[in-house]
Amino acid sequence: MINPSDWAHLAAAPHDAIPLAVWLWLKLDPMGRGPFDVDWIAHDLYPPETPDWEAAKDEVLGHVLALMDAGFLSTYKADGREWLLLLHPLRVDMRGVTIRTPEPESPWTSVAMGRGGARERARERVRAENGARAAAWDAVQAGREETPERPTRPLRMDAPPRYCSKHMPHGPGQKKCGPCRDTRLDQDEWLESRVYEQKLADYYEQTDDWEGRADGPGDEPW
Ligand SMILES: [Zn+2]
Image: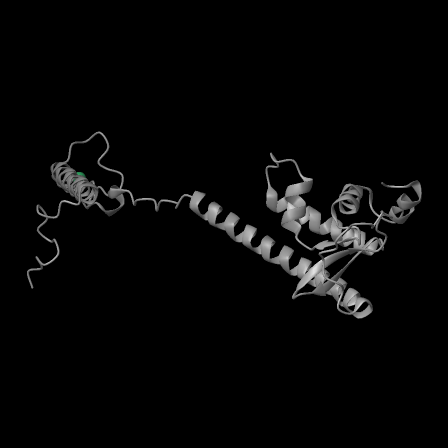
C-alpha cells in the first residue's frame, strides 16, 4: 500500500515519470529490487496496442534515468547483470516472503557504478537506435527518389543543315531554291533514319532481343 508519506519521495521526480515510479513500487519485490529490463517494463506498463514499442522503451529508459536523478531509484550489478533498486521501497509485511533477487555485491560502490553504467548504456542505446533509425530512413528515402532522366538531345541539333549554304540559317524566304529543297530532303531522310534507329534501340532494350541486332555481343566485325 502506498502511504501519503511515500509520495514525498517523488517530489523531485518529473510528472510524466510518476506512473513508472508507481509501477516500480507495485511490481518490484518487497526489497524494491527487480531486473533492469526495459522491454519487460514497457510491455507491462504500456497498453498492448502500443504502436511503437521502440519509442515506448526509449520513454521507459528516459523515465528510469529521471527517477535516478530524482533520488528515487538506483541500480546495482549482481550475477553478471544490472538490477533496479528502489531507494524508498514501500513498507510491506515481509513475513513468509521469499526474496529471489540477488543482494547487491557491494551496495555503496556498485550502486554508484550501476547508476553511471545505466546512464552510459542508455546513452549508447539511444545513440545506436537513432543511428539505425536514421539509416533505415535514408534507405527508404533513397528507394523513393526517382533517378532523374537525362534529357535527350534534340535530333535536330545534330541534323545536317536545313538550307543550302547560301541560305543558312534562315532559309530563302518566299523564293524557291533548288539546293535548299535538296538539303531539306537530305535532312528529313537523316532525321527519319535516326528516329527509326532510336525506336529500334528502344525496342531491343525493352525486349532484350539481341538476335536482330547486327552489333550484338560477339558479332563485332573486327
Ligand atoms: Zn537555298
